[in-house]
Length: 193
Image (cartoon, rainbow, N blue to C red):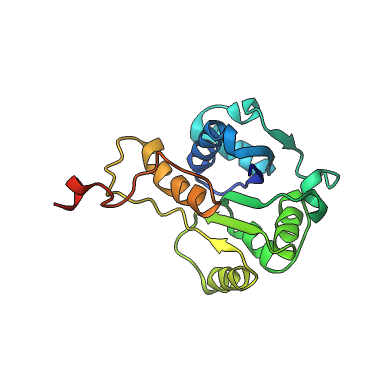
């Protein structure tokens, strides 16, 4: 069954994670019915600063303004199964934890949680304050998944994109995608010896 998903990008540093996620979703067309995409204003300027381009506008997904509440996934009746916020700023996470739906990103997250669907927050800041940890706890208790952007190194990534993919592959697994090109720890017999 094909998935309807929401991808939200906030202004936290880590645009490389969003880019790798969007690139991988392009490869999963046979698993996707529709992708709704929304970016905060800061997300666009951080992307331009960190990646030296504005190519976020070139993805063939349904892109929506952050202040537009008349989009399908602003309502639970649209049946979007998964929402991934990548990267997720601490401010966005805080608003979600406290039920403040002041833009499309926080409204969509509220809808996903109330409908008991899958919300994945790829938080990137470090270290965490107790406020951050308590917000993570609140979201986890409400059914969300906190997936910190903590890359792994055992696959021996050769580039920044490969390194970001170690996080994105985990996110795609959590979202329920058939992610066949992900590195799996000690999955091959020769890796075990």
